[in-house]
Length: 431
Image 1 (cartoon, rainbow, N blue to C red):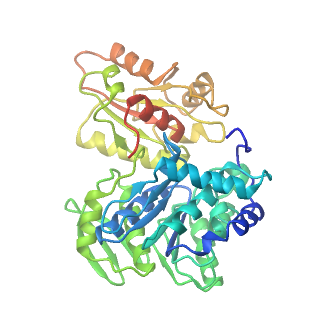
Image 2 (tube, rainbow, N blue to C red):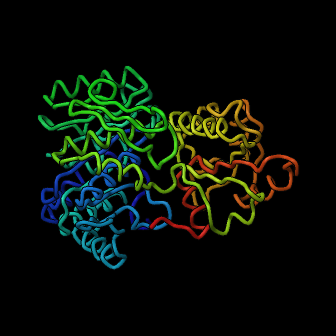
Image 3 (cartoon, rainbow, N blue to C red):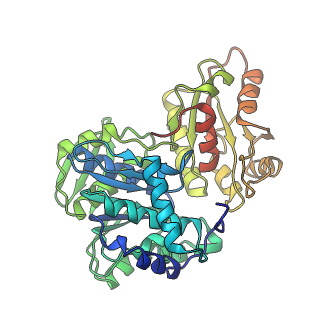
């Protein structure tokens, strides 16, 4: 981080040059499931991994950003078992090799880390590689992959507007950039017709065999079960372990994507995957750890790194569903960075929340000052107060809560960076 510029410099020239020096490891990968989208990328990646591992396949997984430790970005597939986060020594050696090959030329941190992805995944045998896009798609460093087994485009909404455009159709053009002529594409649930139109027209122009959520495959809840259907048949499955109704569509996209990538997917695999899937920092409940001592007795504490208006809507819907099943007063503890739309995020929680506590994000020059963030919450119709730390906010909730009230439900989020701080402070980093 000290040697290379922060932020994004969207281009494929630098990564192409570097990979050429390294012997083009991106051309030596197992079949690639390449995932883009504004929201749901991580979830569909997690479901895809769970499906493959349920079938005994080994799957490498690349995600970003990490929450606590850098090596979380790289999970190395294990035949017949659960993939493991890359060993620190192996990771460090790969970074050294990439840095030596770059020879001090201008390059971003993400491009270095993407080259590390290709080194690691090309040198460890596996049946598949699931690779999540960092930003956008068309000029993202991962988009040197020219022959994906399948490209997956998840829900598109407004985010990273300075880089990707200020309308969903412009952002859709960037995300659609991972489609490759003649290679399959799976299009996940899209809230915006303008985005869907761009994706479908791009797939048609590039002659990509396509499967579209709601047309070619779908999923819904019925009698407490998940019903999945596509042109290959229907499956009656347990509800996904990941909470939230939005995960039904994410699970469906993963099932269809793994099929499109050429893997056999049985109903037994799907059942196992729904029960075993895990995705840290996304509607994850904290059931143990140091932070719980600061919270009121019996409190439910959830963490989620969703940070744009689209994410706010699905998280708020999940909280509303929790409230319907088991009423509790809801409090938010939120930290955000200045590339986001805080008012749009907060607006989704109107009518659900008792109070918002706004906190800083450690070590981030881009964080929104908690006072300013509190004003944004106020503009969205919420009662808000700035606080110094998550621990202080939890203690304040404990102090102000009516002793006769039900134990509260507390959501901590607004940024993956804040979620990373929480997992670190709590002593429960992802494994």
